[in-house]
Image 1 (cartoon, rainbow, N blue to C red):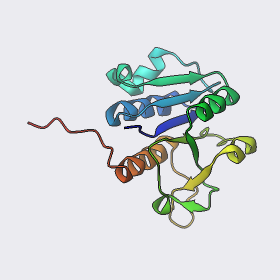
Image 2 (cartoon, helix red, strand yellow):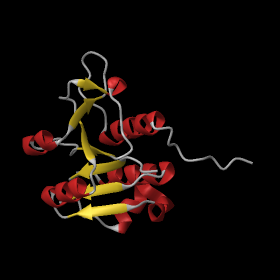
Image 3 (cartoon, rainbow, N blue to C red):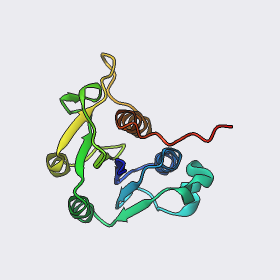
Image 4 (cartoon, rainbow, N blue to C red):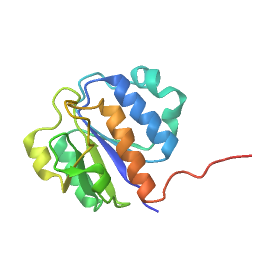
Length: 159
C-alpha cells in the first residue's frame, strides 16, 4: 500500500528536520527534503534530534523546488500544502494514500508560486488569537491524521 509522504520545504531549523525524520521512521512514511535548507544538512545535525532512527527512514533529497515538483508529478502524487492561510480545515479534509503533504520554512512558509502549485491547501484549526504551531508539531498532527484516515499506522510488535 502506498503511504502519504512528507515534504520539507527549505527548513530553517535542523532540530525540526531531525524530529520529523524520527517521526517518519517511527510511523513508516517517506520524506522529501527540498533544498536549500537554512542549515548545513549533515549527519551530526540530523542525529541530534533524529537519534538512531535515521537509517530507518526513506529520504529523497531534491536540489530545488522545481526538481521536487517534477519528481512529485512524475510519481502521480497530489501535493497537499499545510498552511495557516488555507481555507480547508484539517478535520474536514480527506487524505489519499498517494498524497505528499508539504510544510514550509519555519520563518516564512512557502513562496506564493509554491502555494499556487499545491493541489490542496489545508490548515489546522487553532484557538482564537493563536497564529501557528511549530512546523514539526503541525506536520506530526497532519501525518497522524492522514495515517488514521487511511488505517495505515504501522502494526505494533506487542508481546
